[in-house]
Length: 316
Image (spheres, rainbow, N blue to C red):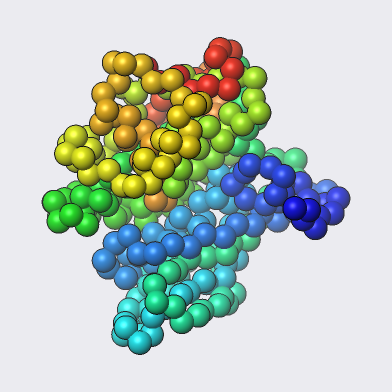
């Protein structure tokens, strides 16, 4: 299928990346993305915050600054009170206000299933776009949020998760990647993506698409939300994790020493996950220190770019 395009499209449908980029002039381009989903928490206000943070994340991952947004709403008006929708939108607006993003409008439809999200536009310099596949040999991979939101949310739905863990994961998903991105932009970062529905290994696989390099992940270095491993061992694995594993299993070589629960966490679909930053070894330690000094406490070097095996992810 052939899609319309023009010479000013810098990042379009022919690329596997987090957002599209269109050049306006020599010093300005716009970054555009869209994301929406069904509720993953019961509280409508928190759902609005999480959905907004998730949508804004793609702009941050590209090195852009989000500026404007449009609401996307599907609402079952005959099943839910309109006050629920007001709380969802209020959550989204409060998160946009935190990100200094202006809401310009949006579109709503009546639907049997509630959905909410944003279409977001940001600014970026055409020469300062951070692509997800610009890996370089010897680069270190830094993850800025812990893994496990899919497994924890499955435990919440099962009525097993404690109130403390529920609050922790809710606040984590509602946390913007804004500070991480601002700090990242002070360093010579080679590549970046955000970790969402494809899970950690699924998004790393996208970074490796078409590459002659490989990536090695140390499973012992992964930051994980407390309780995730326990729930994974209980079998509280979302269906998306199995789909992610099946789709990318030919690209992944997992050591026999990595237990099944850890493997499930690696494929666990995340909601509003952290940034995965690829940077030269010389700068990696300083970047991690700066992230931690700004209270992004779980920021960790979890792996590196290697020469062999080409196009593969090795987990040890």
